[in-house]
Length: 196
Image 1: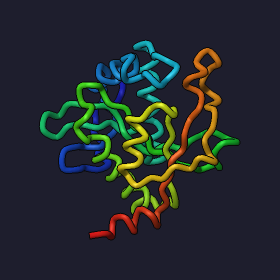
Image 2: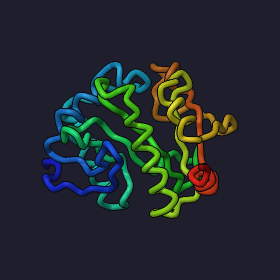
Image 3: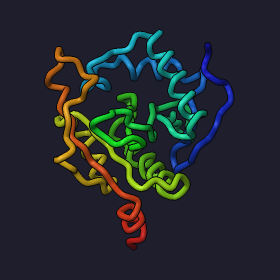
């Protein structure tokens, strides 16, 4: 089944459109799911067929719940960059039911330009204002300093007591199992936004 051809815009930022995934995004999505640099801290590399199926699941989540890992589109060119979004953690025994995470993944040619931070700020505002969420978490492999640095720029704080070994990371990749957890509450976000 192909991805949709109709754009559903969730948010816009100065440089980005945050939207659903389209059929025209398929090549970019395949690229980021098998690029060894992008997937350095993940145990899987998806085949084209697996990436296509994952793209459809992401769109289903967006349509069903209004949240998910959205496509990021560069306004200046209309090209997709990767994703950033909000999603249920679905890690029972680690996070309470209903816990929402923020996460991201970009093609390497778009790294280092602040796109993830820009999109994440808009999405946290969306989470706490439009969606009425009380808190959002984020987590990454401990050595993934690119991601944890973004979390810190967003004002998220480390919660060492919640660090965990990811149950979906196989024993063949022990160096990718340990994850560190960051979080920010609605009150913390609103106080941060209110500062001059």
